[in-house]
Length: 99
Image (cartoon, rainbow, N blue to C red; front, side, top):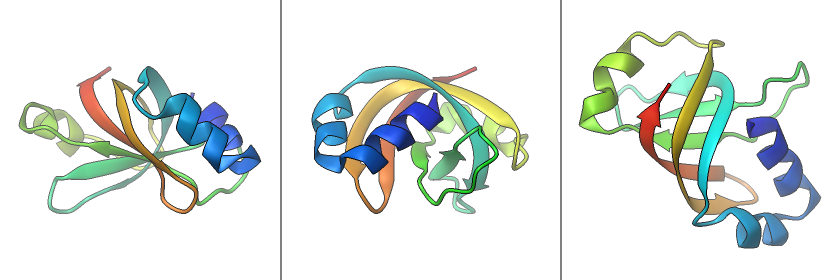
């Protein structure tokens, strides 16, 4: 889940990047925000603690209708490939499907 990725990033960003960049993953997190232009949405940790670390999920045209119905704080599961990892901006995922 997103919590595990965030923990790995906080522990050692270089190792997290080496481990997860290019990985095909299924992730579950809490919806934090949706880009008003429809380019991406962000998932945060499921636990009660506060964190700025997120997973930025690209939105494909075929996902727009589903994402349009999302509401912040709902649990979302995505499947896709992690395309980038950064210690400040977190993870970026090219989303293949949304459950």
